[in-house]
Each structure stands twice: as C-alpha cells, then as structure tokens.
Image (cartoon, rainbow, N blue to C red; front, side, top):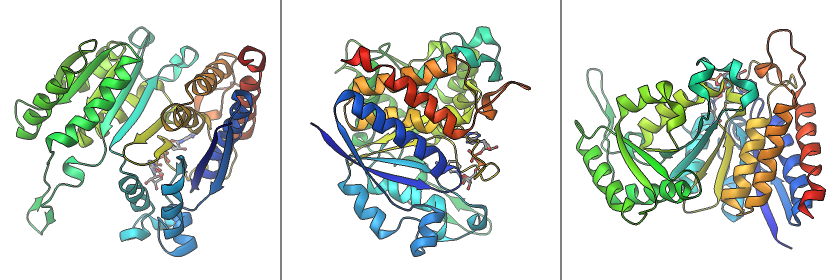
Length: 360
Ligand code: NAD
C-alpha cells in the first residue's frame, strides 16, 4: 500500500477551517482508493509568527522538504498587515515557494454550470469555460536584480533565462497533452526583450510537442480575450507578473474566490492551496467555502502524488455536491438556504464515499 506524508499548514483566518475539510476528504478518498495519508500540522504565516516570531518557522521549513506534498490554507492577519521582513505573514508564503523550488503555479478555472449566476459575465459567454493558467512563479520582476527604491526613482528588473522559461513551458505543454492540446502563451514581445526570449523559447519547446497547438498573444489582448471568449482558452502560459494579473482576472469568471484551487510545483514537493486569502471578515464563523481547499487537495492527489483516479473522484464529488444545490453563503443566491464549512465538507466526503461501489 502506498503511504504518503502530507505536511498540512493551516495558516491563518479561515485557513484552519477549510484545510480541516480538505484533510477529511483526503482521508476518505485514500480509504476508497487503497492508499494511506499521514498528516502532520505545522505553523505558517501569522501562526508561525505567534509560534516562533517567523512566518516560516524553521521547524515548518524542515518538515515540508521531507513531505510528499504540502497542503496550505491561507496566510494573513490584520494585526500584522504592516509588519516587516519575515514577520509579515505573506513573506512566509513567498519563502515557502522558493524553498520548494516551486516555479510553476497552476490555477484551473472551471465554471460549474449551477453557478453561472455568480459570475459577472453573461451566461452565454461562460459556456464551456475550462482553462488552466500556468504562471511562472519564481522569476521576472518579483525577484530580478537590480531592484531599488529611492525618493524620486525606483527600479525593478524583469529578467528570465532560457532554462527558466523552458521548464515552465514544459509544464504547460505536458498538461495541455491531457487536456484540449492548446497552449496560449502570453507576452509583450512587441515591446520587451524579455518577452522576445520568452516567445522564442516557448516556440522551441513547442517543437517537442507536435500534437499540441501553440498560439502567442500579447498580454493586453489576452486580458480582453479572457472576458470576451474565455471558453476558447485551454492552457494559458504566462510569466510571473502577467500571470498574477491574468489569473485574478480569470478568477472572477467563476463568481467565487472560495472555489478556486492552485498548485505550485517544481523541484521539491508540490504546494497546494486555495487561491483565496485568510478572509478575516468571516474567520471563525464556520461559513467559509471549503471547496477551493478541497479542490486543492484534488490537485495534490493528481500533481503531488500521481493518484489521478482519486483526484478525479474528488473533483466529481465537488461537482455533484454543487449540482445537488449545496451552497455556502458566498455562492448562495439571495434568500437561498446555505450550509456551513463543516456541512459542505461532510457532503463532499459522503459523495466521495458514494463512489465506493464504482471504485471496487
Ligand atoms: P481574501 O481572499 O482573504 O478575501 C476576499 C473576500 O473574499 C472576503 O470578503 C472574503 O470573505 C471572501 N472569501 C475569501 N475566501 C473565501 C471562502 N473560502 N469562502 C467564502 N468567502 C471567501 O482576500 P483579502 O481580504 O484581500 O486578504 C485577506 C488576507 O489574506 C490578507 O492578509 C492578504 O494578504 C491575505 N492573502 C493571502 C493569500 C494566500 O494565503 N495565498 C492570498 C490572498 C490574500
């Protein structure tokens, strides 16, 4: 029997509430598919600062490297919003991604048919939306040197090497192969030299994948395409800053932040977390939507543990629970009955276990 060690980093705010449900779902699907999940919890974010004065405590840093995968809730606390250095909760998350060598951030954006009303777009624009955004996560403006800030001038540097572009492009092409076989690469090659290298390198990598179609879009046009015809996009590949902006734009298509999962993969164990933050406005109330965390657990199964069938089972359970009408307050229509975090998690667990007969 395969045994997997999962480091669980619940973090702050609603993080512990939603990760608890994701862990319950992982246990259920492991039982069903005949593997075992061993979890251990570690502090990160404001919880790490409370424990050791560091948003990524040394104990957490040591543990994640030995795990098969890392499941994270969210970080951030109002009391530390202006904290400096590693006392800033978000600094712990950045340090964690770097530590794990997580250079590719994967964000699927899928519209659940029953939730079309929650989107700001017209329903006819949304039909068939099912995309995966692959964002380069370690390079570009976020880490390029030199960088500086003076009273009257500031500098950031967008820098990429061809190997950095190649490795993230391969993630995009590999995932496109098990999807609709199209990669849309985003750049600003009409203005930026870095984008010219990006375009050349992605085109070269594409030659290894003759079964996948590659198109290039300028980032401004990509931003328009995301709202004008989102269903046409399969895998969208972008550098760090463009990917950050476009993935948030794509996130609103589904109508709720609470539904969206992410995976950050690279050289070490993968990091899996919902897209949303710690939501201090609803923390501790038991109303947070756990489906983004549960869908992140599905990504952990697929990309972190190569348990693709178990991942599909969880994703199907989420879709079925939504189709059956279960709603946390963030996705409920006005006046519609809603359920809490725990009840939503229980419904998914029950739906996963309902697959018992099918799996055997
Ligand atoms: P947020 O995502 O925490 O919340 C934005 C809005 O969405 C809030 O109204 C919140 O109630 C709602 N929301 C978010 N997740 C939800 C869920 N699962 N169910 C129901 N409603 C949900 O973003 P914010 O308010 O800008 O940031 C709050 C804190 O989180 C800040 O400290 C920020 O730095 C941090 N943050 C962390 C991450 C992360 O851990 N990856 C990401 C974004 C923000």
